[in-house]
Image 1 (cartoon, rainbow, N blue to C red):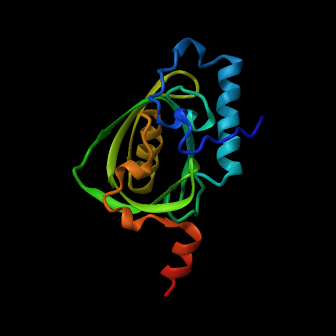
Image 2 (cartoon, helix red, strand yellow):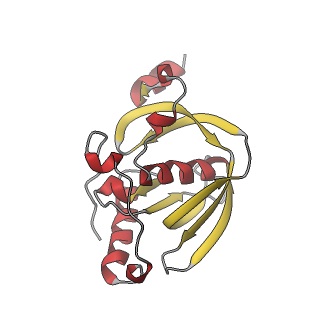
Length: 176
């Protein structure tokens, strides 16, 4: 396994719509290695998700994981999940504002509205289709990673750019 270089905003791959993955390649050694490398990269950078365009691969694939006890993913957390050719459908009109960051926009955070409950349809690591319903932080991570597959970043969803802050400044001044 390898840690992959993360593309930052400004690199064209971050703003380019990714292509669908051919289902016949999913179980192949090279694609499985890409998935392993994406998971390792996500862990290395302490992220809760990474999309293929973020590691310079223009395919509709993302991985995510929220460790148990993280506080954001519930008591049980969210195990490592693979999303290949995902489709996300909002199941509620309710949107929740919360702070987001991104490996491709390092050191910055901002308030982003996201649907509170979504249905995800995707192919898994084994190439088989699956569907799940996610809410709260899990739904937020799914939407964030799927945005990357369309060439978008959280900055595009922000309603008030005045909430954009460097992480260290946000931590420093929010304590007062």
